[in-house]
Amino acid sequence: MNITSQMVKELRDKTNAGMMDCKKALTDTSGDMEKAVDLLRQKGLAVAAKRAGRETKEGVVETYIHAGGKLGVMVEVGCETDFVAKTDDFKAFAKNIAMHIAAANPVAINREEVPADVLQRETDIYVNQAQESGKPQQIIEKIVGGKVEKYLAEICLLEQKYVKNPDLSIQDLLNELVAKMGENISIKKFARFQIG
Image 1 (tube, helix red, strand yellow):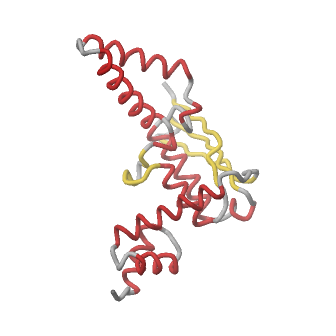
Image 2: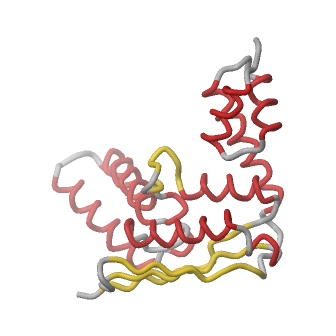
Image 3: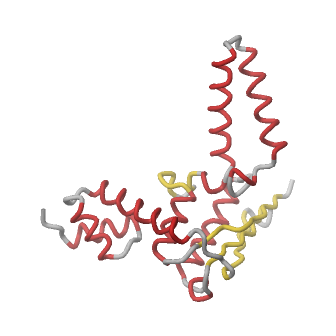
């Protein structure tokens, strides 16, 4: 199949990947746009996994203030070098993460950071709900397990659906940036303040 420059541009707009990477992905998938997107996302995951062990000593602290000063977020995003920390793409990512946190109100960055008492309280609620329905114990365990999984996906920043594009999770967004920048990038911590 003939890969046109328009196809490459469309894929580049969708994924932010480099032009040569887009052309190669389209060639490898015989011009199938969806498969090419998937291929580039997998490549991003591979790059992110390779870079994951590297230390992120540089970065930025980004803030976002919303609704006339009634809601504010501060987030620290780390990277390996000062050079990457100064790029527009990195700064835009940090700003978008701060805005996402303001909108989605996550409890923790990942599952390991969810406070045990918060998780236990939710689990107890789900167990009580399931027991009141009168279902057998093994069904109750499956129901509770499913509800806990769903709850964690909703409160963990990296698993949340990105508010500007629900097709992507925050982890997907992070992986894309890692692939583009060629460095390990991490969301280190955040604080969300709201009046009332």
